[in-house]
Image: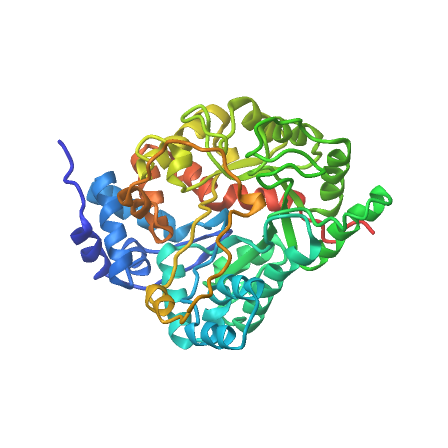
Length: 450
């Protein structure tokens, strides 16, 4: 007999049955089914609307929805790459800076910094941040804490911001310095961040190889646990995904991968060219990753990875994190296309090597109103295309429905979709976070090399 399909109304009905209980079982937590729905109840109209879009695409049965939500609540959800929710920009701070004659560079930095810091000091933004985080059911975000590039001073700015945030919000948001702290956060019902940077810090003085590698140790001591081998462009390590020609990993790049291994820092080739990614995988002695990518076997895109590259990454004991960027996914670019990539990766490379690296975030509902209050006058933050952000053109058209179905707060419905696709609970738990936990454990060094 065909099972009835669930709707947002079913979700609300399940939410109304809340009952509390929890007992820690390893990285899993026992949560009754009714309680699971209550945990992920949409805290505002935007999140509720995005849930409705995703449910209209998935059309799960009531049983699938219920089981998926319970499984999501019980599992360690440790995403392989992404961003914590962002606060509304502080328009008063922006207006004060403009009035004081801040430079274009200062204004550009404030535009990035204020949404990253706002929830640490503003009570309304903190409430929205915590509500969105808990609605997503995520324990730990592998947080982008370093601006794209290799300059240590450029990388350290974003790292400082998230260090400040976790210092300020210690009772609610933790900085996890090792994998076991992520497990402990799940057990305690806490939220946490694990730090990554979008580049390897290089002094770029080019006196000796040893001098060039020395900043990796410094950033590891500051809590960074993963680094991009390249971003989109070519650097001294190798070629980025956006280059028209991929020369592969350089001799110096092999030394970088070796130093990352030695320091217990995960090598990430999400933004690297295909040959560079392949050669980095062959050079790595520890499990490495493409933390937020897609499968070219489903849809060929330069930010995805072909089968040969994914296999090489998996052969290290590593993983690929499937992202939530519609134009990288192809097809309709929605939650169904996202699940197609996960299905493909699991069937082709095994359940031990697949994760979710959304590469998206939640933005406060108050942000648009706040930005409208900024008195720019004749000023504007820099709008020229940044060097590292150059992208090859593609013809994909992203729809609002695709974006909404993949909203970061729809994480519980990603799990529901995996239930629908017939994956076992064991496989789903691996995809949700246990694979990321395993790779972080395999790389973490309690006493890194001197």
